[in-house]
Length: 131
Image (cartoon, rainbow, N blue to C red; front, side, top):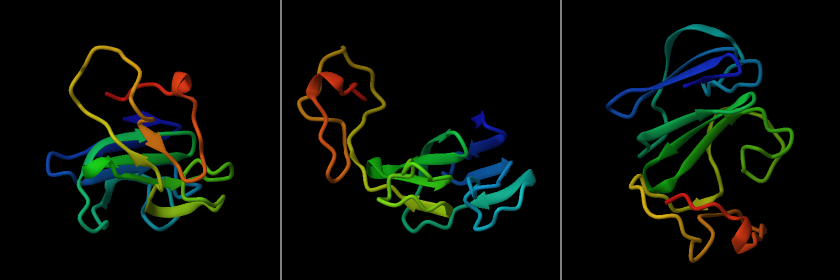
């Protein structure tokens, strides 16, 4: 996956490779040094195995097992979901409590919001289904 001058590749064993523009630490390699090769392998999170990746605007995310979301990079508006506005040079676990499924299903409103952040309230109609 590529966006905003960064690339992410997820290997079959769940290891994440990131490279590209890294001004805000969005590669998650504990530095702000740009990387021109995918040698920036990241597998340092305990009990973590990436299932999906998604670069954002100067930040990046990894969806892990058990619906865990890990993010790194630019956080001026709280987009990392850790309750701060501090950029992160390493992948940190997002505070969201999510449920999701890789199986398609018929469109229907969820019984409860698919993701909930502490202190955030969403109306049922405004919540897209992740199932």
